[in-house]
Image 1 (tube, one colour):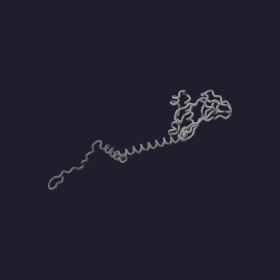
Image 2 (image 1 turned 90 degrees about the vertical axis):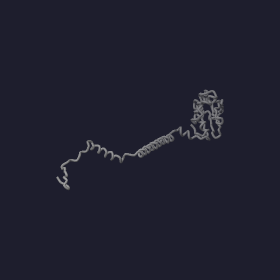
Image 3 (image 1 turned 135 degrees about the horizontal axis):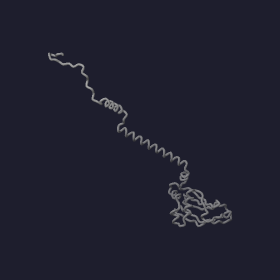
Image 4 (image 1 turned 60 degrees about the vertical axis):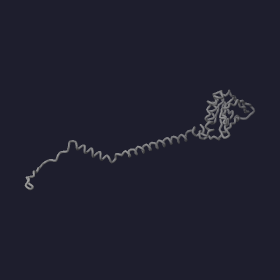
Length: 209
């Protein structure tokens, strides 16, 4: 025992340091591991930015995909080409043929003049042919008109068995109109139900269907 100014001072030798509380070791390791992960965990603003960028990339990719589909349709679709090949000041026609595919007459439409003409399409000759009634679209009034008959001087008799034995070839929109108009006998029904899309869209400058 040592003394300082006569007062004895006790000394302890061989005493051990207090042990850490139970469980403190793995908690410390977990805390260090979490702290090490913080360098790559995004903040709220960073996470929001990542989401916005990903959404923009998705939208851009979708637009490119559908744009490619539309371009492919424009390049390969005959309907699309026909629709955009017609103007509201051009001339277009359909030809009537009989059951033997003999040409009878042409129905010509001039959108610029808003008029139509009906010309004989058979080989000219001295045989008078009377072709049955058919319908035309009056571009000026935008109504369906019925032509009672058409007389043509041909090189032979072109036997027709009535309106049902007359068929049409030519521009699809006109052919569609001629065929649907022939289904009805009443003038009001023809105006209401005949497929005149070809004429309506052309006259309004929206292209042709």
